[in-house]
Length: 239
Image (cartoon, rainbow, N blue to C red; front, side, top):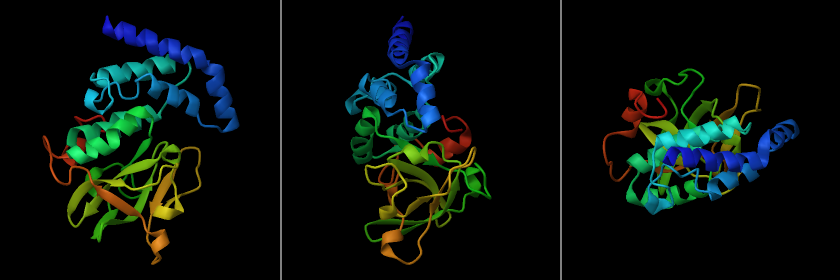
């Protein structure tokens, strides 16, 4: 019954926008910001997150229902599969208490976070990534190249899989509250193509071009296992 009620609520919301709205945004090259924010305002983006962070306290099945009903009304939102389903879930499962407090309420309220794992040579093989993060005073300096990062051009933040020495880590890349890329944090996009969109993390010797990672997810404490192992196992939503 709860699932039926959720389906009906999402269906009614999406029907208010309709496929005509979605198609017009696509033809004009516009973002579906109004729809995205409406989904967030109704609590659907965070339906799977803990209630103490502004979520609905449900699970991934309920978030899948949100995706299904939006698509059924002609308004599919790919970023739901990335920002709430991958990134927010990683922070909720493996983040420190401070990281959860900092990121989860915003993600539930409509902040957008992309996920960067794929590389030109490694593909999506998590064990083969070459992008590196080096510890610096007050943070981490990231060098490398990521491609096919879905919806990263519309996101406020990026979570990237990087190496620190021989260790794989998930690091939240600091970006201001404007869609990436931003020259202020050294994030640069390649020219978007039909199926190829990349983010280049690089440092050319100038402070203004440095790409800084704020911190690894779960840096101070890990709750139940390793987030990288979770990704590699195929048991997580990103598997």
